Amino acid sequence: MIRRPLHASVVCAAVLAPACDVSSTVGFNGTALTTASCAAESSLSVCDEEPCVVTGIGAATRGSWAVAADDESVFFEQDGGVLARMPVRGGPAVAVRTDLERIWMVALDDGYAYTTEFEKGLYRVKKTGGEAELLVRPTMGHTLALAVDHEHVYVTLTDVNQILMMPKAGGEQTLLAGQSAPPAIAVDERHVYWVNEGTEPRSGQLVRAPLGDLTHAEVLLDGLDSPRALALGSDDVFIGSSAAAYRVKKSGGDAELVTEFQELKWMIAHGDTVYLAGQGGLARARVGDDTQLVDSRGMLGVAANCEGVFATGWFEPLLVRYGR
Image (cartoon, rainbow, N blue to C red; front, side):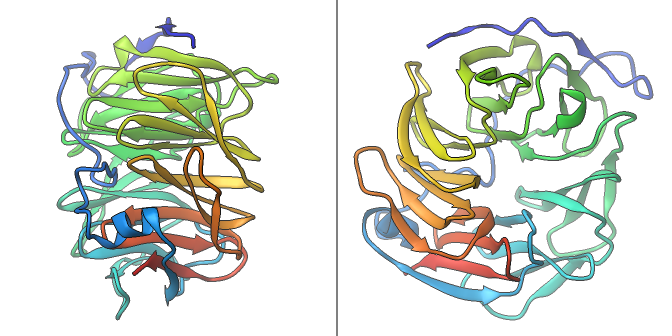
């Protein structure tokens, strides 16, 4: 295990005020789940321990990564540039936005859905619908993966090797340069984590910074083999490469193989269980247990709430729920 300060420059966007917003804050990710967040009798907690059922609940755009869930609804991309929401157990889909353009990811907080759109930037819209607000359109790079806490939104600018942080309502940006193609980012109640894919074999990194303060970023683990996915459990960080998922304790230590998995694309974690989406389908895995393949159809995006796990189809226009 390697833990060292990340010596990278922090710069602010020139179009904004010159001072960087790096004040510390305590927050949480509205889509992150811990063992305390779902009751033992909840669908997700039960499905962590025993087999459950996959049900088709809608038709997401084929090959879309964009899916997120809160307590009541699942948000996903429909054909025609529509961000829609649907009750978590299925039902009529309601349009939230109808003007999406090359959406990449969606994340939620109590009131808003945030979207990264490849050439347009970072937007938010009320979860009930309405006019979308442009929060930032970077002068360089494209907005890809994102996560939110109480106060801030964090975005990967993968193609220009930067992490962007800004207040959720808009305002001053902080840009952390010196990364290496960061493809995934997530937050828990204390930190924001991301992975750097790297440009050479085994040059990937797991990086962490306090919420609201990218100036104190530190490398927790390096020598990783092209990490592309990231999920946070209650005590663990799960890291996905193209063919396997690994676990490292948030308190430190070496990476441990969780499972091999064909063409892994995205992950979500609950407690010490991680759900994997990729060409191999949708699977549930835990260190020391046999991996359960719950659906063999290729999946791309994956999200979860206490009602279950939601995934979007890679090759088919699928939106499925894994639960009781």
